[in-house]
Each structure stands twice: as C-alpha cells, then as structure tokens.
Length: 241
Ligand code: PGA
Image (cartoon, rainbow, N blue to C red):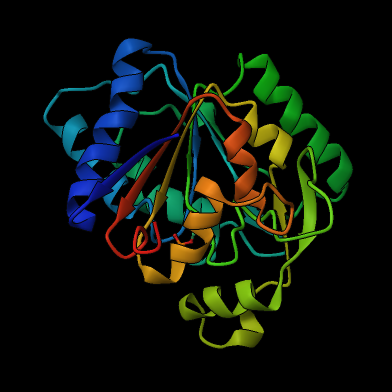
C-alpha cells in the first residue's frame, strides 16, 4: 500500500484532485468510481479547479457512485445524487448519461443491484475508485459484519453510521435506515483505489487497514489484498501508525 501523509486537508485535496485528473489525462474515457461524504469535498473542488483551468476534459468520462440512501427522493438535499451534482457534476463536463447511481427507490432492488454490476462490467470496469472510510472501518455502506458482502446489495445502517450521518439531517429520525451499496467485490475489482482518511477519529480504522487483521469486522481491511491502493492521510488519521 502506498501510504502518503499530509500536513493539511487542503494538501490532500490538491494531491487527490491531481490523482483523479491524472487518470483522466492518461485515459480520457476513464471510468471513475466516486464517493460522497465530507472526505472527497476538497478533492472534488480541486478537480473542478483543474477543469476550469482547461487542464482536464471529462467529456468522455463515465462515473459510478458507490451508494445511495433508500427511500429518499433523489432531489432531497441529503441524497447522494444531489451531493454529487452540487459538489462535482454541475461544475464539470461529464455527460449526464455517463453518470451512474444505484437507485435507492427501485421497486426490485435485486434487479437494480444486478443491473448496476452489469453496467460496470459493460463499461470496462472501474479504472480508479475513490473511497472514504468510516470510523468503524466501513467502505461505502459495507458495514462491519460476519462476512464480506460481495456484490451490490441493500443494507440496514448501523446505529453508529446513522449517528455519524445525522449531522446532515434536521434530526436523527430523518436519517434513512437503509441504503444500497456496491459490495466489497465490486469495489476491489477497481484497477486502482484511492482511499482518503481525515481526522483522529479515523486513526484506529486506518491502522487496521494498514497492518491489522483482514476481517469483515473492518471491511476496509480487505484492501490489503488489492495490488494498487494509495492511502492519503492527514496527521490525525495517521496518528496511530
Ligand atoms: P466522511 O464519511 O467522509 O463523511 O467522513 C466517510 C465514510 O463514511 O465513508
């Protein structure tokens, strides 16, 4: 694993933004796996800056987002559709038809999940997957569990995740209890993975990812088995290394 420690979140934003855009410069029709949460905000801001400077063109890029809440309108301010449009898609030139999300409101969720996996395959697989990590070691909405869930699936969110995410809602009761997420198998099939962790509350999970036991109780630990992972950390997240 390529572990990079930075002084500030700003610096991580710049480094990660270049990393993602570097992929697109090398391969204009790249398939990007994208994440939501506070972690990717600065990387996305830097990708937008590079686009505005004319340094990168996203017109041939395809994207797949990791996850989405269930039973939340896509136009709700807390939907991940909305988040991605506000923080990235509305500011760069990825064609709308190349943007892919799991549909948290699909009637037949099994079918939805299977079709998403098929779409990723048909697009040639994900070239680079951007990931945050939960303080409990989750990636996307793959929560600690007794076994790794391989493909896209529906999940009941853990109490700790509902609590972590309630900061974006008016009250904890408004946080959806279920989400649909790419599985661990879908994630580790990406050719390259960029995972970012910010803050001391992520330090324990980060340590486990780097030199702990690989266990579904810390879903991100499975990244030890991937051959091309870059981990960008601030000092807080790196404090137990
Ligand atoms: P955060 O969430 O970026 O809001 O910290 C990361 C995650 O839970 O995957």
